Image (tube, rainbow, N blue to C red; front, side, top):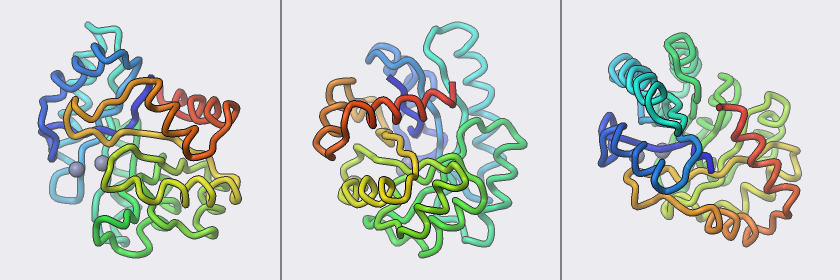
Length: 211
Ligand SMILES: [Zn+2]
Ligand SMILES: [Zn+2]
């Protein structure tokens, strides 16, 4: 199993990166993305630490740790610059914290993340058809989430992505090991969203691109 979106104490998660990765390994994960919240205040603090610890963990443990960032509530005008900074400084997963309905995310953030060339728009809320089409064209992945606060719009995201031809991923957005899920829970969530086996396999393939 692969999870491309989690948080550690380097932002608002509860565990050290090593602790979270260790729990993920025990839970049966093949790979885990450490993608702490960043904006212009802390990207230069968080990212090198995640790059460093992922390097250390990857040299000792079989689970693959992938350094990344989640650009969160940044002004729309700053997103492109932050995406570029993240890529130049070793982020292998660049997420933009999308327009979830559970937080006052600035309208236009989904679009700005897609145009900036993020890898994933996390919990994109009621993403528009137009933005989903642009995501499809640019190869930006749209996220389904098991995080309770953000998951209310999963059905909308599935429907909109399917119509637009955009690709999906599913992540836990874990802030501690307690939010990890099993492979069967993951499949259950995707099936309840109406996805067929072939579509679930496509999600797995999309996630593997980051390994
Ligand atoms: Zn958070
Ligand atoms: Zn997150």
